[in-house]
Length: 260
Length: 371
Image 1: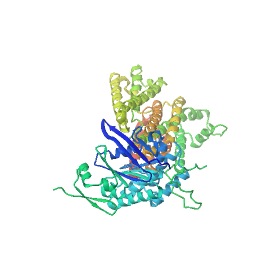
Image 2: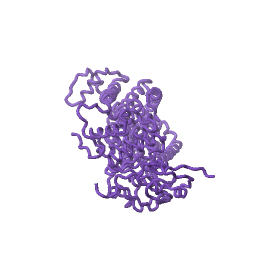
Image 3: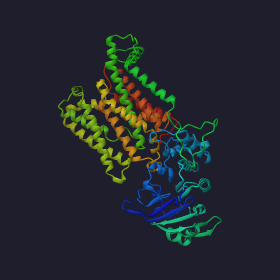
Image 4: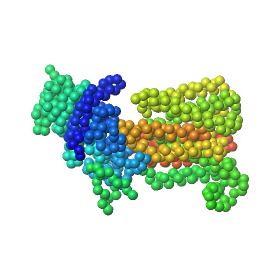
């Protein structure tokens, strides 16, 4: 792999319906790094992730592994970057196997069908995510935690080395949040994946991220290690939140404190 | 040969011999395909066999096989019966098969393209466009009687075809006027607006030319009665083109079912696929409508029945809708022309009368939910 960063965003501006969403974002993510983007609602986190995933046209602003994203064909882009949306659509009646197999789309010839290698790749991912027992189950019948693992499996089946996770734990209880993030971290270490995630739970976000980026009103308000970004001053200023920050074993722990 | 797998972290070595067979993905099972083919053959033989003069199914089968090059079987039929089989009933049954297959395939395709279980082949204005055009030809053409339908063998289908495609084009233009905001929902709403507008025009024309009402309604309710080989030949090229394009896109429709953003991040061009499929399905529907008028329910009931019984993948729904839609309409036509013989019940009425209760039955007994 070249020395180029996995993600390089330079002066990214996004305007939707004449409303500026992102105004001059710079972001560099090294290969193998986990960067979590935080910020209050409406700060532009999901939009940034969409731009990095190539779902928003932003000519000249985003490069993946040194290649401008607009110069990649869609199929090639899908082999480089995989996205797990905040609430992925669950197609009625679709089995876990068929859903995860969708991840092989960039490798299946247009109008063709999956090869034995595609199926083998899918079964490998299912086994690794402990989903083998679920292959025949309908996706819609799974619990939130199981479903999130299947969404992750679909993204991993893409074979992309850059994983974009938009609020991967928002629908999960605290145990399943940890389970999913531990799994992502393990996959990242074993496979050399690069992870860019958005998250609302700041304590848990800080425990897994190498670096954090705080977005506010479409700009980068702060960036650095979790200890540098998760400070009482920054959170009060940008989230309008009253919190206490406690130094935990793996990062700062954020405790909301009721205002007097 | 197996395609060489791309080198990715997720591509494991080949499965060792003797390993447990992995579960198969959704796909058309041979049993269902065979059932669909058998249904079409049964409909074909029954459709040709039954009528005012009943011809034994064995003789019909022999006579049908005689149409194949190099086959010479003795069907035991006289000249007149052979003419009934090949010139009267066979074109009608084949047209019923083609139109039923087209409507069901287009319905299944639209349901996938719009991710909407209520989508049917007439969603984008095909019915209203054809209705207005045919009404205009009958009312303004000065022929206000049943003769309008039989006396103008080409004008009516051509008007219906042009009206259908014109309406879909108008819907597309209006739906695309949303610019960046255009979405499947925009297109559906544009279809509703165009249908309402054209239907209003049709109602106005009918009101001004009330002597045309019977002829127009006779067409609107759908008719296979005048079918000759020329009708079959009019529909066939479009039906083949539509079937090939739509059937090749079954897997893409499965990918589209996760939404445009996800489909795009998986490497697809959702808009491009959607418009190609809309164009293909609309062409097939327009051809079907131009030959037989407006036959309802097939396009919505058949794909849903297939979905509930055989599976929700479009790789299953599309080919089986084509086969079972064909068989369903051909058998419905048998009922339409035999139940009240010698009178014929409009086929659109029969599809609704038979299809509605059958669909309710399937809905109540099927394992899966539609939601």
